Image (cartoon, one colour):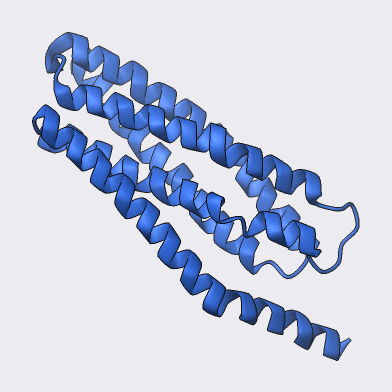
Length: 197
């Protein structure tokens, strides 16, 4: 067992942890949109806050172990640079785009329970949240593809561009489908609940 193999293991663990965090975000966003009460929003926001304990350490492990691998055998190639660019883009989308909106959701949660107010619902259904999560997931897949296939500089860049486009398109399509089917179902549930009361 060598230091290189340990660094490779940690690199893979970091990647798995990063995707686990993105998966939790996807589940959390879906559950937030389906939440029928402030209490449910509060519960899922607790999960979303805990996700930060995964994302940060995972990214750090990936960068540190990746740096070691690059300096002790893997070398510096165009696909390595593409991977770094992809990681930076994911970090910017997560911290600069998604995080402020999650903070706004947390501040909009009232202390009392009850149906989700319209102002909180608007923040939860912000399409930028879905766009940020989907594009980060797609970029992550693109980075993994570059690391495994090791394409040329042009190929590595094209992979990231295509991944970004696929992620954005998927988010827009899901948003359109959700607007057509998800929202009426949620509001219908609220109306039915009110009738029973």
